Image (cartoon, rainbow, N blue to C red; front, side, top):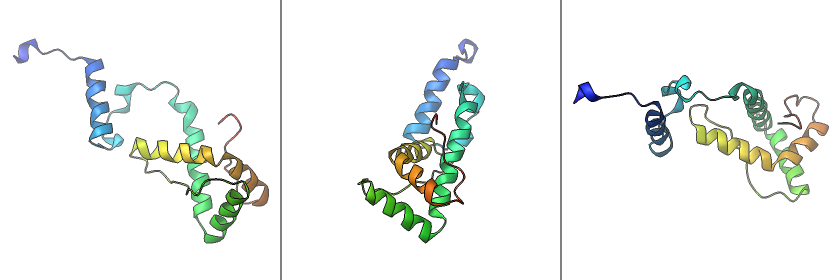
Length: 124
């Protein structure tokens, strides 16, 4: 039986993806080269800026209060910013999708706080 075994890269990706998504296997256990994700370098800076933006706002109660007031002025939903866990892809996705909803709030926040320097660019 083992003599007939053949490595199937596509099937291996499928199985590992299933393990990550269904069984919540932390992504850092997986060899990133196996997935051969093109363009990851392009989004790495954007993810860093969003992560640092969320950290900045959540770093103090006064910053969080200003951000919440700006969100209220823009009639935003009562949601909170989510800081991801770097070993879970779904947490990064949740952080990015929530930050996208607060895009206008981040722009207004940047106008108010000179210490805020990680505003994602318009292209991000």
